[in-house]
Image (tube, rainbow, N blue to C red; front, top):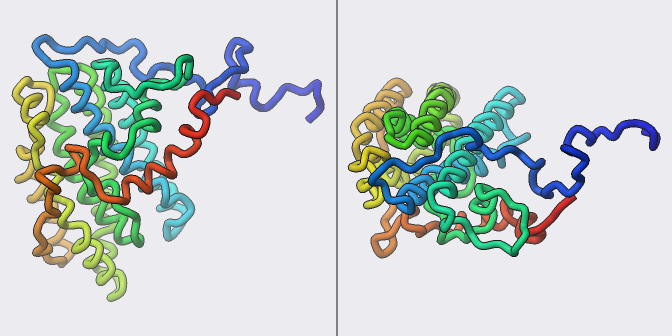
Length: 306
């Protein structure tokens, strides 16, 4: 390309401003034009922390799924997993932005003048103990059966929660949930179809599926266990008590297991540590390793521009 030709990157520069943030392309505020008024009687900080819980679940699950890019059994499933990861990343961005709008105090302090959007600051500049995702989302990837089982357990529980969250008194959460229901329905169906395929495939695929289910099952109860903050916001008509979804989640999982000819694992829930789980900021070592990779560029250049 000669000097006289238009740069292929010209379209990324708005108004001739070349000082774009290095980790994005000056995207519009994801909540631009949306009424972010906190409902009367709702504690701003509680709402922000609730959004962090749901946003962190989506963000960390998205990161794990994105690690499958170029590693799936075939191109179609490779693209499917990438799209699922993008769906969850979109949910995470909206929820983290909602958290920051509800209470700017939850956003990590950065060097003055750092042009980092609030949702990105929450993703890249919090330490592991500040994340509130359930531990199922963070454990390291295994084989293809492992990603199928993890996505099934996660999406069945998240779909049940989002369906109820559509009635939230918070207009932002209700809107995010309405969009998310359509996305997560596909995630659940994709995982369910593959669960059946692997269960009724070869002896090898069946044994791998059963092992993955046995390994991940102790992490499933955390998806349908309530943190005091979730109970508080459920009573305020803003959030959802995940325990209220337990019967529905169990019924869906039991149906998938029955159709697939796979027994329900007899494994106890992964114990809390001092009464604390992922919702309290208590995580496995896997989260620290995941964040080290996910955050390295942003932390190395917190004020990076290009």
